[in-house]
Structure formats: C-alpha cells, structure tokens
Length: 427
RNA sequence: GCCGGGAUACCCAAGCGGUCAAAGGGAGCAGACUGUAAAUCUGCCGGCUCAGCCUUCGGAGGUUCGAAUCCUUCUCCCGGCACCA
Image (cartoon, rainbow, N blue to C red; front, side):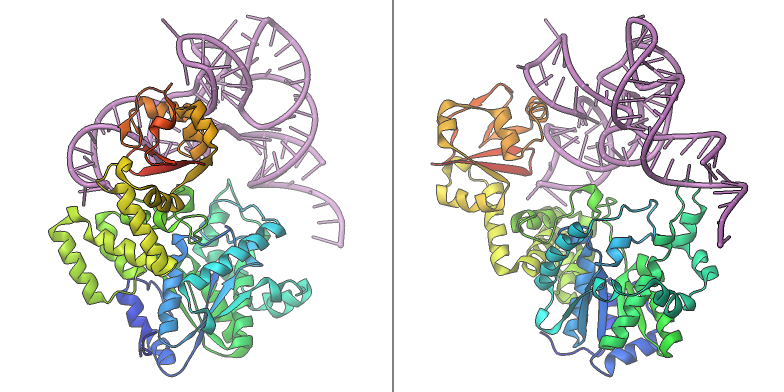
C-alpha cells in the first residue's frame, strides 16, 4: 500500500484510465480533503469477471491506494433487468439461479485485485427487491424527465431503430442505477461512482438524482472502453478474453493471453493494467521499440498482470509452464515431473493407461483433450499440417497413438498450431 | 385483438421448388512469412466409419418425385392500427 496520493485523478489520467469526469476542480478537491467512499458496479452476466472488467478494478485499486474506500457493487438487481446502453438488442432476462451463481464467482474476483479488508461488497438486489412500484415511482421516477431520457444517445439510438425498439424495462434501467447511487450515498456516504464510458449517462442520472433529492453534489468518473488495436480483443463474444477465475482460465493461459498482446498496445496496457511506475513503463517501451522481437514489453506486461490477478504463485506457475511448453527443449527430454507441472496449467485430460496400451485414434484423443470440438475438426487440423504429437508433425489423420508415443513416463503432448498445447496423461 | 414485416450456420446477411451443407462479409482456426507479433497471401470453417453418407435453414404438420424456398398451424421478435383504462 502506498502513501495516500493527493490527486488520484491525475494518476488515472496518466494511466489512461480516465475518460470523463464531473467538474475537475471540485472532484480533485473532494478527494484531497478526506477519505471518500466510491463505488463501481458490475453486472452478474457471467460466472466470473474477465479482462474486460479489469480497467474498473484497476481504477478501484488506485483509488483505494489513495486512501479511499471502494464499494464493489454486484448488480443482482440491475443484472436482472439488463442495461440497454449501446446494446442493439433487448437483453434476455436471466434466471434467479443464474444470477446468484454468477454473483458468487464475481465476489471472489474482487478479492484478487482489491484489498477486501477495506472494501465493501454489496448486491443491489438487497435494497431493490422490496421497494414497491408505487414507492419507486413517487420517490425516484418523479425526479426524471422523460424528455431528457429519450434525448440520450444510448436510448435514442434504440428508439430510432425500427427493428429493435426498447422495452419499458430497459428504459427504466438508468433510474435503477441512479437509485443505487442514491442508496449508497445515503447509507455509506458514497460520493463518487465510476464506470466504463458507456455508463456516463447512467452515472450522471445518479448524480442528478442525489442533487435533486438531497441537494448534494456527488461525482462521476469513467474510463475508456478498452479495445485492442486489432479490434474487439476484449469482448467476450470474441471468445478469447480470459476470465480472472483460475478455474476458468489458468494462470498460464492468462499469462499467455497477455504475452500475445499486439506491439501497438503494449505500452498502453502497461499503463492501464499494471502498477508499475510510469517512468519504468516508458523505459520498457523504449527498450521494446529498440528490439520488438524480444517482446520484452509483452513479457513484462504478462508478468505483472498475472501477478496482480494470480499472485506470485500463479506467475511462477505460468512462467514455468511457458518455459516448458514454448521452450527449445524437445518435450521428450523433459522429466515427467516438469510436464506434470505444466499439466496443471494447460488443458488436459486424464485417460486410463489401458486405453493407451490398446491404441487410441489421434482424432479421438484430440477431441478428448479439448484440442478439437469434433473428430472432423481434428481431421482438418491434421490434414492442414497443424498438429504435432510431442515434437513430431502428424499428417496422417488415421494415426493411432500407443505407449511408444509418450513423451515422458505418463504424459503426451498434443500441439495444435504454434500456440495451443494440450496434455494427455495416462494413469 | 387486427394488419403488415421478420426468424437462415458463432455474428451480420443472401437464397425464394431441384445444380443448397446452403453466396458474401466479419469473427475464428490452420499453413507460409515472422518475433508464440502486425500486415499480407493460401486453405479451412455442421457431423460422420470423409472421393461417400447423415442431420440442418424458429417448432410441428402438409403439398410435391423433390422444399431453406409453397400451404397450414404454433412460438418468439418488430412496426402500424385498434381496444381497454
């Protein structure tokens, strides 16, 4: 923990974590003159947070380091509604069980990045579920002008889209979020809300609501929505954004994901996703530019981001697995123990030894290990020359593996392309 | 409730009786190049016991030698109108 900073806003700005904010002078002053409480909300739309949520966690961490108290809000209520902002489609409502299950995982994720001994964790379902419609309309709805709401870009876009439209439910989303801010203001003295830049409108709804109901000025900040230079690298739909939960994405896989960062994004991401001093980052960026082939920027980025989420232990495992699976040494020269370690980090399957003795079709094995979704896909990969067993390229899709193919006493490595590695262990 | 529009593979989107496992784009995957980059080029991209076969075009049924394409019906989405209050 660092000593409190007088101006965390400036820190966020130089970190590339600041997009919009309410009046800077009063916001800076506010943060400099006392320990404040702020909140950031997360929707429980998935069983874990992923790197797309990391910017928010980093902002929270910086503010926490500056001596302020974070409230992590899990959107159990709002998540049941669905935020229409900049979505082109009405979101499907999630079941209660699904929301509950997701909240569990998300709670754990906060602890990976924040110091939870000085943080508050809330679920807005708690204070929303018993509010009556009448009460809500009288106390909250009264303060909102529909004229204003429909002029908002996020909503207007949906209203103008003849194909989609917007339901009253989603239209009300911003009121609910404003209600959250109002509640946290009253209950915890929360005076700052942060969110991705798409949340700017929703956050301001809360700021306005609190001014109207309590005559108090509270604040808002947003950070930019992050995209890789190659487009939608961080979106879940791209299917490759790693989870923070090590059970869903191992530290090794997490590390590898960062290691594959585009050159153009390295410096920006070092600023956003690590706590390294700016000077050090600039130095790394310079060194990286001199010799991009060494990818020292990516290495540093991967190391730091992995450490933040998975700790020193996780980082060590990731680096060791990387050394093993991407090292120069033929896998057949590795010890069974070393491979077993990597085994913990890469996608794997355990298979009875007897099956190996009898001979297993490579297509079948690939599918079981997760290297392919189907035999057809496995066949294609082999025919395209993308598959190796240990270090041996395979071109025969009818190939059957047996005991002689083991790299070590119990393990065999299936490699697809240059980056994907799968282990099969025979016990 | 009525009228009209729509539902196609991961996403967008063609198709409108056979030549459709289904154009095109995006995403994704593999190969070449390389730095486990970027850009570019090439191939793949429903499944299978893979020169062939099987299952797909919201669900169910029907017409036809033959349907993603026609008919009936159901579900859901969108828009307009009406009704209720």
